[in-house]
Amino acid sequence: MTTTETGAVRAPNPRLALALLALPAMLIAIDISVLSVALPEMAADLHPSTAELLWMNDIYGFMVGGTMITMGAVGDRIGRRRLIVICSAVFAVASALAAFAVEPWMVIATRAVMGVAGAAIMPASMALIGRIFLDPKRSIAAMGAYMTCFLTGMAAAPLVGGLMMAHWWWGSVFLLGVPIMVLVLFTAPRLLPEFRAPHAGRLDLASAALCLVAILLLVAALKLAVGGGWSWQVPAAAVAGVALGAVFVRRQRTLDDPLVDLSLLRRPGVARVMWVLFLTALLMGGTSIFWAFYLQNAQGLSPLQAALWLLPSTAAMMVASNLGPWLGRRVAPSRVVVGGLAVMAAGFASYALVSPGRAGIVAMVCGSVLATAGIGAVFPFLMNDVISRAPQERAGSAAAFVQTANEIGIATGLVVLGSIGTVVYRSSLGADGGSWVDGFREAAERSDPVLLGQVQDAFVSGFRAVGLFGVAVMSVVLVLQASRRKTGEASQPEAAREEALV
Image (cartoon, rainbow, N blue to C red):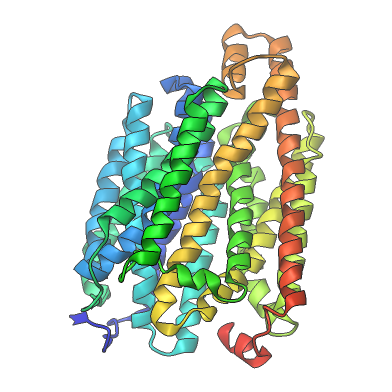
């Protein structure tokens, strides 16, 4: 059956429908960071350049963030259940192709396709949740469960990747998505209602192209600076990206039916919350690339051992994502948010204390536990803060804003923090080019313990610098959150807040 703006159809079994929607969300979250566990073996097998390595790792997240708003509009027009079914099939095929890639460009291309498919599935799923759970309280609770699964997927990615790598080759991390998406493909028509907006307006393809190209050009500028040093291509790509972004914003303001409703950002407090979402996602995404290399290459652990050391952070994420809303019913939610952000800052401070010795593992694990616990506790509040301030007819657009900020933040963090770590690594090693991936590979090929020790020390120096950068960014985030309280932007009635957290 199909629903429109004026009606809704309940799923045959709402709980099974929610579980079905949450399953691909968890997979999409896992695929954002699981590749970091497999990167050392992939780099040894495929021999990518520094730029190719970065593209392999973060093209997926950028395509998710860059196309999510567009794919949400596509779902309005062709039907959200239909879009989920189509993109589940696309995701499964692309995953299978990525598993057997023999060149870096094949991994980059297939992960880009997976990113677009994931970008289509997530907003369509979030929109359907509101149609399946008609009661507002149940709808908010279901959305919270959905986001908990997404965050848990990100936290569990190192463990999942480690287990796969312990028994199979690096391509197995891609094959994980095939059976899950096949399950969604065959069960969605039976468990999910259909929804298609009858008057969604024309899809502005020019806006979609401007948004995606602007993002990718800015990313390319960062990658060129990291991989090849300063050249004329770096400012050229950056200027072109900024210019196209400006054209995109101006176009949205003149269209009768814009792809993005920018008026949401003018509502009190929304812009600040979006910055908090973006910056915290940037730090969480950026540090994930260091975890696997630190535990496996700097400490000499196997992929499974490295994954087991990250298991506490997975548990912290799961506990905090439920503990935060529970505390929000008993104390002011703003206090919970500030406290959670402070815990995150302590986590990045712990990264600044890592060392090449075994004691450094304790510092790294403590940092990952504190950082994931902090974001797990505050993310439901931040997400609800944006959505609750949007008019009812724009709630879907607000949800897309939240997800886009999160996805782009994660992908940007991989580039920015990876760049910082690379620059400090080269400075510490006294090298003009190359990355720690090249250094670890060269030390292994030579079987040179002296060179390995130098590379390990230089890599750890880069990790420490990333930790200090995280502390500085979290200081800005705490100032943004504190200023919201002083200006009264977070002045919703307490009863309304508690109701939203039920």
